[in-house]
Amino acid sequence: MMKGLQRAVEEAAEIIKEHKFVRIISHYDADGITAAGILCNALHRLGIKFHVSLVGKLDSLLLENLLDEELVIFCDMGSGQLGNLPRLKGTTVVLDHHICEREQKDGILHVNPYLFGINGMDEVSSAGISYLLVKCVDEKNVELAGLAIAGALGDKQVMTGINREILEEAVRAGVVSVRRGLRLGAGVIKDMLLFCTDPYLEFAGEPELVEAFLADMKVNGTRRLNELSEAELERLTAGLLSRASAASRDALIGDVYTLNFEVIKDGASFAKTLDAVGRFGKMGVAVALCMGDESALDEALYLHRKFQSRLVAELKRVREGMPSSENLRYFYVREKNITGVLAGIIARYISPDKSVATINKNQGKETKISVRCSRTLLSQGIDLAKAVATAANAVGGRGGGHPVASGAAIPEGAEAEFLKILDKIIGEQKRAAQKKTGNA
Image (cartoon, rainbow, N blue to C red; front, side, top):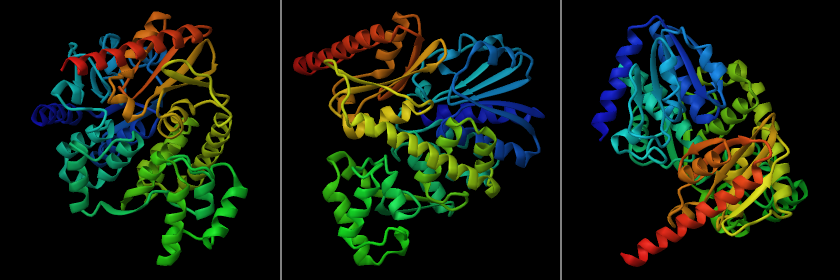
């Protein structure tokens, strides 16, 4: 299976080396940004010119502007739009990891792990695929493995399969370091607790609670984790674990990834910062971070804090309660560009027993909906990629993604019908899985 994917990325590498200019289109989340960043670094080293755009979706206007490009590479998108891409006159390469049909189109090199029997939800991100590609171009590009790890972290993937292989290679090369510890990110302790949304803690958005907790633990919140004594760190860890939900406790302690070659060393913090920058539309800042430009760091950190502030404000509203149906909870958001992140946090930490849909009507004529579920629900037969795609199509929209995380764009005014259909489909999926298990 890996051999098939390896041959595909080798073919993509040969295509790139035949061109003097590459047009890159990538998704604006952390995985998409790092996937594009890996390519940009490799192309720069080869002396090949490039132009990169980070976007939320592929639409007809964007494709129209790409018609005459000699080589277009799509990262973290494209597998669901293969039917539209043959319009492009040049060579097209798709580096994606979302669920796709086993189809190929003339003039398109479609590189997707699912085509080779590899789970793209958990085992490799688009950044990982980009990394495999640039390693075919030059073995020295192992230095870019930190970006691949950040992409996987941004998509909440586990270090298994190809991700594990990339990580082990990065550790051997000194590009990434791994240790066990508190997974709060990097920064001043009181700020990390105040804006801690993944894992989600009761202190998020509550400065008085943060101050009271730190006082109880006898920990100076103006310091960083690596500045605490062993006794202080033990008190802080015990206090956090005692106040966290079961899901948050599982996420609090684990592997912490240090990206030794990146401008933000903590892997989770780097991924979250890139995601925030991308969602605010600061594409130049995002690419600059991936290319090691420290002059972009101050603006990036400011945008990350601004994003977390908005996220925390919305989560405080969630605590007041969400409308619910048999298989679904849903929530209308007030802020732009936080829909998917918000849905993921709610599904994992606040509503693990039901799928969660966050609805953003601030998108013009379209409503954007992100749907997430916990891994527990995934094991009960839910496949959100299929459910969301079917429900969106039924109301004249479009949708898809991963079984655990999917999204849709539907006509404004169709929200209630979409939710009704989605709830029904999820129920049918669960019943079908229960029946199958009962008959086994």
